[in-house]
Length: 203
Image (cartoon, rainbow, N blue to C red; front, side, top):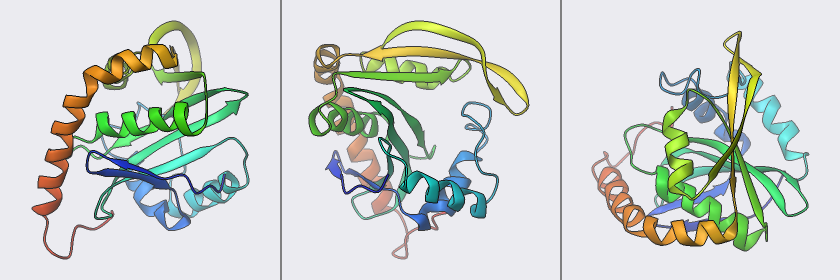
C-alpha cells in the first residue's frame, strides 16, 4: 500500500518501501541466515518489482525499509493484513553486520499501536527461526499456537509458530528494551561512521 508513514529513533529510520528498493530486498532475502527462515519470495529483481507493484495497490499493508539516519539500508519490516484493529507484524530482516533488530522492532511496534491505533499484533514465524522467536518474546509477544506444515519453504512443508501482543504487554516490554535499543543505536552509528565516504553498496 502506498503510504507516507515514517518513524525515526535510536539512530535508525523506518520509511516506506520504494520500487528502487527491489535489488536490496532480493539480496537481503537471499542471505544464508535468511533462506529457509522466511517464506519464498521473488527470485530476481524483476519478480520483486512485480510483487512491489501489487503491494502498492493492496490495502492494509505497510512495508518499510529500515535504514540508518544517513540512508544506508539495513533491512525490512512490515505491518500487514490489517483487519479492524488487529494486524500481522513481520517481514523483519536485518543485515547481519548491524545490531538494528531491537530498535527496528520497537519503532514498528510503536507505529502499529500509536500511529495505526491497533489493539492487537499477531506474528507468525517459521518454527526454525529461533532468533525471531526470541525477539518476539523480548517484545512481550505470547506464544499462542503452532500451525503444522502450514507453509512451503524451499519445497518443504514448514511449521509456523503463532504469537500475540497486546498494547499492555508491549508497554511493559518496551521499558526493558529502551536501554538495549539505545546501545544498539550507538553501534549502528559507529558502523555507519566507519564506512567509506561513498558509503556501501545497497547490494
